[in-house]
Amino acid sequence: MFEREPLLGGDKSIHNKKSKSNIKQNISYILNITTILTIIFLYFHISNLDKSKNEEEKPFDPQGKKNIIMMVTDGMGPASMSAARSFRQFRDELPMNDVLTLDQYLIGTSRTRSSSSLVTDSAAGATAFSCALKSYNGAIGVDSNKNPCGTILEALKLRGYFTGLVVTTRITDATPAAFSSHADYRFQEDLIAQHQIGEYPFGRAVDLILGGGRCHFYPSTIPGGCRVDNRNLIKETKRKGWSYVGNRQEFDALNGGKNVTFPLLGLLADTDIPYDIDRDSKEYPSLAEQVKVALTALSEATKDSDQGFFLLIEGSRIDHAGHHNDPAAQVREVLAYDKAFQEVIKFIDSTDVETVAISTSDHETGGLVTARQVSESYPDYLWYPEVLLNSTKSGDYLSRQIYHFKDKKSKKFETFIKKDILEKSMGITDYTKTDVESIIENSTNPEKVLFILNNILSIRAQIGWTTHGHSAVDVNIYAHTNSQQLLKLLKSRKSYEGLTGNHENIEIGAFMESITGSNLNQITEMIKSTDHSPSKKDFEVASAKGFANLIDKLHENVV
Image (cartoon, rainbow, N blue to C red; front, side):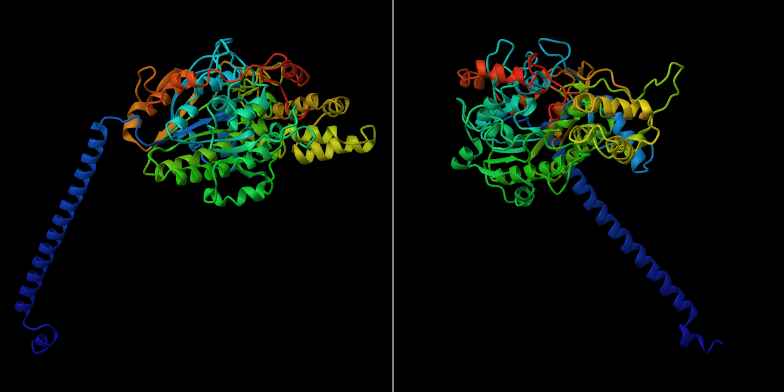
C-alpha cells in the first residue's frame, strides 16, 4: 500500500502541501480577477452616472437637432382602451395583467373643448394641437376670427426639419389638414389639397404624405375623383418633381422607406383606407407599415442634417367606428394603432437623435361604455368580448353588401341576410325575427342598416353607446422620449411646460413649440394672405354632401 502511494501521488504529506498551495493560488487569482472586474464595473457605472448627470445638468437646447412625432387617436377615449385591452386578452388568451403598449406610456389627460362648444370636432381639436390655440368647430388652421394661424409643422419646416403626414383617412380630412393647410371650414378639401402641395404663401411645407384621399386630387371626370374643378393635382405634382405612390405594389417598392424620393405623395385609396377589420393586406398597407416607411425615410433624409423631422401620425378611423357605434371595428382600429405606436417606440429606442413622441386624442366619439343594460331588470355585471371576436366584418362593409344586393324582394335576400350577414360575417346565431325584418325593411338605406347591424352586435356584447357624435370626456396623453432632458420637461407639472397631469389641448401644441424653439406667431405673419375662405360653389357642394352644420357627419363612406 505504501509502495503504491508514490505512483499514485507521491508522498502524502507533500501532496497535501501542494494542494493547499494550489488552493491559495486559485483563491488569490479569483480575488484578483474579481477586484479587476469590480474596478471595471465601477468605472463604467460612474462614467454612465457622470454622463447622465452631465446630460441633466447641460442646459436644454430647443434649437438642437431633434425629432418630433405627434400622434393622434382620433375619437379614442379611455373606454376605447378598456374595450380593446379586454378584447385582446380574450382573443390571444392573455392574463388579466397584460396591457397594450400605449398603457405603458400614460402620463396625463387632456381637456378637449373648442372655442365654440364644450364638445369639439376634429378640426378644432387638431388646430388646438397645430396652432396651440382654441378655435371653432370646423376650423382648419385658422383662429376663432377666421385668420390663418401658423402651425408647428410649418414652423419646423422653416427651421429646416423634414415633415410628414401619415393617416388612414383622407389626407385632406380634418386632422392632417389642420397641420398642413388653412381653411375656414373643413369641407374645403379641394383647397386643402392645394395647400398641402404648396399652393399658398408659405410654399410646400410637407415632404411626405401617406394615406387615403385621391378623391380631392383628381377631377370628377376621372373615376374616383371628386374635385369640382378640372385640375388633376397628381399629374401636376409629378411635373413639379413629386414622386407618387398610388397602390400597394408601388408602396412596397419603397422598400420599407429605404427607397423614398422626396417629396413623396402617397394616396393609397380614393377616400379612406378600409377599417382594419375589412382591410385586404394585399391591397392596403397597415398603419404600422406606413409608419415604418415614414420613420425610415425621414430618418435617412435627416441623418446628415442639423435638424431632424416632424411627423404627424393619425389612427383616423377609430373615430369613424365611434360614429358608426361599431365595437368590432373600433377595438381592431385601436389595436392597429397600438402596433403603429410600437413601431414608434422601437424607433425612438434605436436612434441617437433626441426624439419625443406625444400621443393623444382630439376627442372621444360615440360615448362608449363597456357595459349595457339590455333589459328592464337590474343588469348583470357583464360584457362579452367574444361577440366582437366572432364578428369578422364592419357594419360599414356589411351595410354596403346589403344595399347592393340586386333582388331585395326575393327569398334569396332573406337567406342572404340570415346566413351571409348575421351568421357568417357577424357570428350571430340567436338573431330574432324582428332583427331580420328590420334589416330587410331598411335595406335601401345603408345608414340605417349600418346602425341596425352595429346595435344588434353591441347588445349581444353588452357594449353601450350614448351618441353617434362626439363627447366632452377627457382623453389620455401618452409620451415617450430617449432624452433625459425631454423626459424631465414632459414630467414638469407646470402649465405649458410639461404634460403630466390634466391639461388643455392647446398646451400640447405649446409644448411642441417650446421644446423646439419655434415661433408660431412668425408663421402666422408669413401666411396671413392665404386664400382660406370658401366660395359660393364650395357652400353648394358642402350642402349637397350634408355638411350644412359644418361638423362631423355620419357614415361618409356609405352614402
